Figure 1 (cartoon, rainbow, N blue to C red):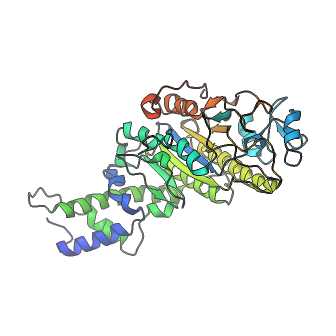
Figure 2: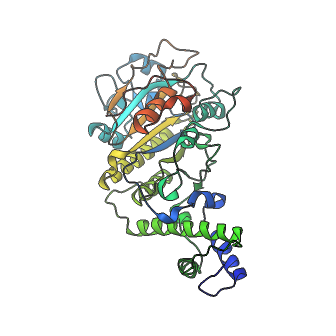
Figure 3: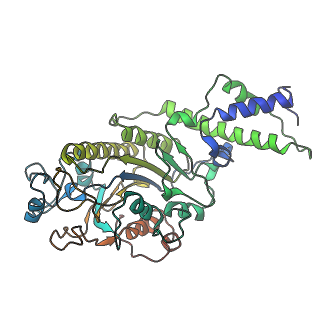
Length: 411
């Protein structure tokens, strides 16, 4: 192979391998960025951002049935005072920390689906989250997740960009596990960018390479060069977008706020990634729930609403939907520690310029319970079916394993 910089083959390999290792996208690098050098982006495809509330969010203190006397009877200490609730109508209101979401609702960019769950609910964090991720029970084969199965059905993204991305330090969720596509996990935007002192020389080296069609071309060398060139192209695109990215929207200085700001930058960079996944931990509020839940809801509400406003300001508002879920709700009655224990049905949330705003579902029945928990009105796979069919534009049945009636969640 001829290399125009006159570096020896051995030196080129050493340089390339060393620099490739410095691109912090881990083992997923070659596949993720294969063909990314073409850099062609699609700014019209719809994008789904998933926010996972880990730990079991208390839905009753999120969308508050403030006019229900049974709510206050079940929660003499934890019930949100009526005067504090941000009212949506004569029955329902938001937790007072959710000003961002309340504003989104008023602007037609927020929807909640109440009483979402599944038959024979499991109160184990791990098992219930696994059910939400895979749409399968423990005794069924679960090699992939629902979003992974969606990704398996999609054509390769233009430009070779990663089809999905998990941002955070947590373990990658099973929801995006695929049998054919490797989804990377990254902690921050810098991991998309070249590190080290030799990135300029490497970029120059690869850009100056003369093409060769020699039958004796070393496959490993070709593979490394191709992958590294692609990685550099993607990295350069993201770096340029990040350096020029400007926004009037102030994200909260929280972990979730930082993650979602990165999501906004990546979307605006022109990446063809269709699924972004982030986690917001800490909702297992068994004791002294009031203050903790207030902080968590404020962090979520402020960060998601900032993302929606930011995307709107960059003309992506109508093609990005933010879906939030938790593995279960909390029990109806508060416990002796001024907290709530693991329950069953709870609300899901959708935000963005394409949603049909409002609250879907009946007011939770707090007297007709199942082992002290709310009965579900909607199977969570109905919401997934709606997202897959009406937002991502695919047939939900192969992904979910059977047909589920969708809901009118999108405008």
